[in-house]
Length: 228
Image (cartoon, rainbow, N blue to C red; front, side, top):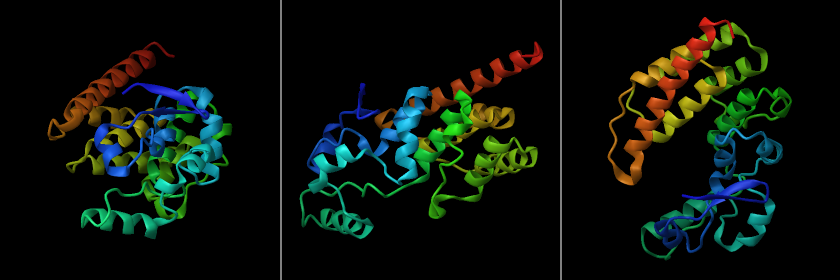
């Protein structure tokens, strides 16, 4: 879908099924940090850093505008999904603004690393509930360059690639590999065979990710050979 910039982040119009399910066009605001950071454009990092520090998935302007359609907390969100499932209500609410997951942090840190701007993520911390060991050691390597942290991150990442994974998990792995410039993970991604249905183009997305991972690994090795 076509992206557009608003409130300092990238938004996109929701597909028809999402509008019917939620009762409004959320403009993909739940993934606005992820979408903005995926572009690797440095201009989005300041706004995204501010949101992550405040534990917010989207700007307050969007929260104020669509408040009636957004859950106030996790219980409210889960309850609305339950009522929607039993067809007691026609729509379900969007997750709360403070309902943080690992995705926006991963894409933010990866974009910061690729842009070489450590100052943006030094004071952006990850909430305890989503700060798993792999994310912790990966971020440590980005901040310190500690080779032990890199080895631990690669071990955990390569181990996870022995399992069948959903397309969005492969996207996260690719983002972490890009941030760490990990040849080992790039190579594993290039060989990874993910069996997915062709629904919503997920299969084609995965093939594109593998192809791009291969190209990154090859290009990196070429630069390394000439001493760059």
